[in-house]
Amino acid sequence: MKSFNKHIIIAGSARSGTSWLSEIIGLQYRYRLLFEPEHEHQTQEGYLICDKLITAENVERDQKKYFVNIFKNQVDNDWIAQLSNRKFKRHLWPVIPKKYVIKFVRCNMSAHYIAQQYSIPIVYVIRNPYDVIASQQRVEFPWLYNLNRFKNQDLLCNMLMEHYNFDLRNQKDLSDIEKLSIRWCIENSIPFLFNKNGSKYTVYKYEDIKNDINVFLEICKSYNLKPLSNIETVYNQPSSKTHPKSEIITGTSKNLKFTDLDYKTINYYLDLFKIDFYKRNYSL
Image (cartoon, rainbow, N blue to C red; front, side, top):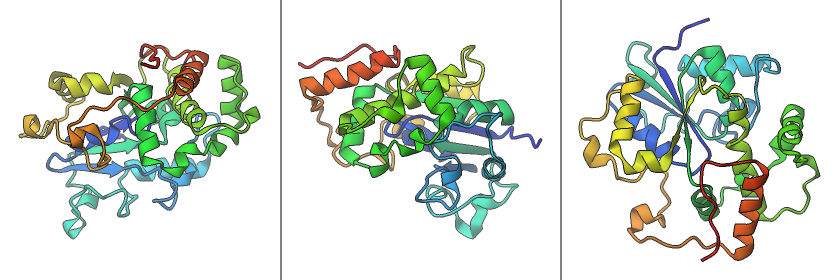
């Protein structure tokens, strides 16, 4: 199999800081950033790997081919290349990129497969679920509330039953908070069931990276990445995907607009899925 030793993947749930982290890495001169090649609406074949639990046992031929095309830099459109140097299509020249940075937000459940089959290092970013869900409510991407791709996968549904006694297919009339909570919990539990020894990918908290540039510099050192020369200047600037009403842009910190029931709902699913990355929040 072709060696992909110039690659790194940034993965994590939507609104977890993956855009910010991949941008401050990928904007380095002669680095090629492939932005969400799994996006089902913005790419031609992204649906093949979007929200899919892919393993060596159930991977399909078209999925294998698409992964290889991504890693060989043979998949391209305005969405994927939105932050690339596209003058004379330089981002596609095989001799130009020194590094390939691939950013995923809907291919998280296949992170273990990618690491195992293609030996590509993966930085998995997690962020406080309350902040993520609040941000997801703000952007209101329709796909965030659609769990059908999850429900249509036997392997995933069986794992949810086996490990969490959670029957996804039997969930009816869910509120928006329930849908977002379930999505976050699936995306931040299932991948780690395949990563028990911590060898397949490294997990970082967004808050740790954002609050301490030295954590970012350690990531760069660990994965042979070169920080931007003006990294201290750009480090606290928002990513291209930061919402205009985010406190990062407004400079105003706001309390999360969750009701008592919202907190109870989120915490119920965090407990059900045995999530212990963060302490539980409750209403003020």
